[in-house]
Image (cartoon, rainbow, N blue to C red):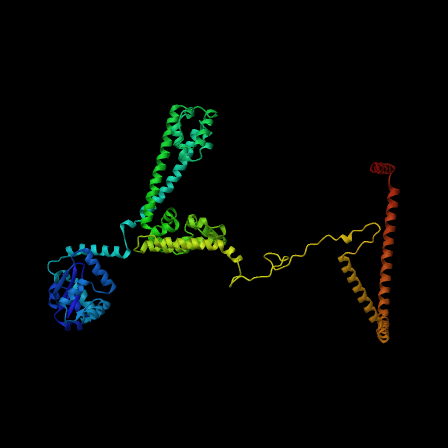
Length: 553
């Protein structure tokens, strides 16, 4: 029996001297404790060394896939014909058996045997020590890791993260420096801030002009348009600003130099970021643009981490505060984050921005995964997805117009023309009323009845006829029914009479008691009043009379 051993240095085939020892698996480990005992069990038959790292990587990748490489097939044909071969992988053994017609064995005893051979491999193979195997093992493991992760030095997204961060910092610094220039030079020439709105042009004009007195002699045609140049020269003559010394103007010009140098470096940095994005993530760049794509990568940490996120996460990336606030307060969650600044979302109407951001996030997630894990270097996938998104946007914007063209199924229905029918509704318009000349009354003529009057008179006649008919029917009723009704009414009246009499008597008694009580109260009040009048002194009477007079006045 032969044993196939894979190593970072190459493939080796060992011959098993005594196959009977495979019966005792527990004793195999003891046999490989020393190099001398290992040489008694196995012996090296052949060894195929790898020429370089790429060949070793190719062979190891094939082994991971369960297939032999070209070099291994040649090596086995030359050394293993007519023998049984012990292998570490059952899939590899099946392929070797099918293609090379070599019997292969794979079981627990074989695995123990291979473990023992690997432990004493440097002793069994002369001329190859541990100091040689260690760098081979390390180099091959690094190569295999790069192959599995599809690592490329051109696809380093760390540079993109640093570049987009620096770009944002430069924008903030440029704004603060430009505002400082405007405030500082505004004391000398305040009208210039309204004439020139662009910060870079303002800094260039201040650097060229210096003192506002020099504006009339200078030519601003390379910087400004003719109309703005004329306004600047007119305003410089009648400016209300204060005078500034030459030392102040020197520092203002140096600050303008800083603004211009920062703007130039920002333009270079943007070009660099654009080229890196087209290299690292071409499909994502085609979908959302360089700046939005770079911010997504920076927010996700790296392109590989971003590729693990679903489309729903990509959609709201950058709006985490709003999301958790909405979840806490139980309000509507945000529909978009950083992806809102993409051109496809910006072109959509406000009511369609949510749908477009969701579609764009789904396509962006696919593009990110293709850029991070795929082998392609072009942006064809991103361009195709962008064309689909633009078609969807046109479909959303034109859906309402398309519905008005006809019915949902088949051809639109052809309807008969009707001048009194409203457009877009099923009802008919009431015909316009014309002026009725017969309604006018003239002297010597009786007023003619209008059509409305005739209709109302006809209705009244019908009502009268109905009343007459109902009266005649009532008269035709049998006299026996009337008599029965009278008898029943008289009997009911007789039954009710005794109870009514009792109630009347009670009510009369109660009213008498109430009247007696009222008369007693009146008498008491009169008595009290008389007693008070007799006891009052003449002085009190005079005071009362005076109060009455005052109240009357």
